[in-house]
Image 1 (cartoon, rainbow, N blue to C red):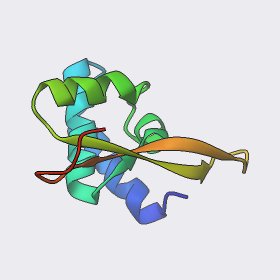
Image 2 (image 1 turned 60 degrees about the vertical axis):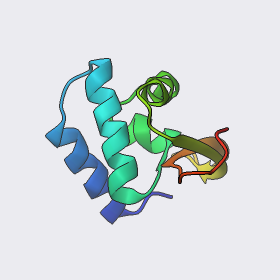
Image 3 (image 1 turned 90 degrees about the horizontal axis):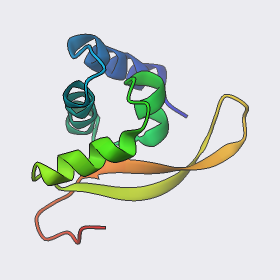
Length: 97
């Protein structure tokens, strides 16, 4: 579950980088990882207005960012757990997924 404090940070990122262009969405996704350590695909869609974070992740990879992926089960508004991706910036030497 995303805490109210975390939601506030994500909403601030959205407010600071408005727009629906792929560049704006990439900037929000990257800022969220930099400021919070990671962002789930669920959070990207719900709080960063990145409707489909997968292509934005691929674009960030193409720009040279080391975006890593792990998996987590997160409850949605319905209360049911869903498997979602967790994006984070990898360290040098960490194997790319």
